[in-house]
Amino acid sequence: ESSIVTVHGKLETATQNYIGGIARMKKVVKFGGSSLASAEQFKKVGNIIRAEESRRYVVPSAPGKRFSADTKVTDMLYGCYAAAENGEDFTEKLAAIKDRYQEIINGLGLKFSLDEDFEVIRKNFAEKAGSNYAASRGEFLNGKIMAAYLGFEFIDAAEVVRFDENGDFQSEITNEIMSARLKKAKNAVIPGFYGATEEGRVVTFSRGGSDITGALVAASINAKLYENWTDVSGFLMADPRIVNNPKKIKTITYGELRELSYMGASVLHEEAVFPVRTSGIPINIRNTNEPENEGTLIVSNEIKHENTITGIAGKQNFTVLSIEKSMMNSELGFCRKILTILEQNGVSFENMPSGIDTVSVVISDSNLKNKTEIIVEEIKRACNPDSVVVYPNMALIATVGTGMAYTKGVASKIFTALAESDINIRMIDQGSSEINVLVGIENDDFEKGINAIYKAFN
Ligand code: ASP
Image (cartoon, rainbow, N blue to C red; front, top):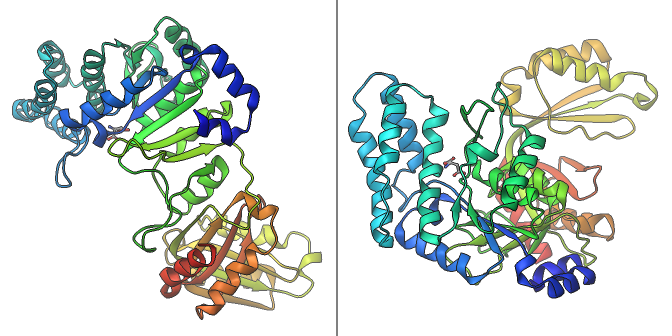
């Protein structure tokens, strides 16, 4: 526990944990599909869970890929159900899914059969129970195997995760039902990814949604920690396809994570963060294949006072419209007019940095489509600016770190690094949260720019 305690710096928490003993410590452990793709992976997971008594509630995904060309069970289920819905014979497709589970059961040496479950599934597929129901069986069945393997109680997520009739997730009632139910279970397996309406119709979250279930379980029992086990040892400071062997991020705040994942870094389901973030429960990203690695800890607040940053991420293909007009700052409604034009053209924008007499609008090319000319014309007509300059083929790089608001020189370090690499900065924006410096450079300079910033801080 020492890592968590240090991060929070809360001595009283440490003392309470010590006095309360391990029995009062509760952790939720979520395992992704690749961690549960085979019996061999299940064994690693079993060892991890058994290594700590506090790992009391387990949220499994469906079996994922065993090798890169393999198919996830969830995708097999969608495929099988599509055949059923078309009135095709889906016997073989369902048998292939059953084989995946049987291989795991055999490999674990369990005396456990899913025959009855598969009979129910076959019937429900034939009766067109819906693709949400179909997909959810991946987690449901894996959860049953996991519970049998660990000797934990199995709790069907349909019982404890609630959606309304429109398929919208209901957080408050879920929290109530889940926490009441888990009070009665010392150890349990709760399958990820789905829940049900009050009438029992199964609804799934979006793809990758087991992360969300894990967070819900953690919030409902006020867990000390939500461990999210996957196949990477946490987040890296930069994309390893761009930077050679980037350092791992040891600790990151929810805010930093949001900035970085918005800019394209991804490990965790976006929505998974909210339930635990509100309750202040840290998330630990861990690697099932490298359990001794401490991974990355996501916390609500951490101020790094050193002259350092947490991570760098970026995206390509933006267009920047740079609008200039003297005395713009005293003109009423200037920006509103620009935004109205974008809105009327159905174009959303990413950023809008402004100076005294200038304002830029950053728009991703996929949003802009081919509307640049129309929009520029309309801005000229409505705002009468001195100039509108269009910068196409732009990339954005976000350098993120909570320390920035408190340390001098971070921004200058970024700009110097880019200048020294002969990269032109077209736009600079420091988000109002002051944990992010955004620069706009040319698409062609993208990888060079990320490397330059990374090197400046490492
Ligand atoms: N099995 C589901 C998917 O493939 C959900 C998850 O793994 O989190 O999207």
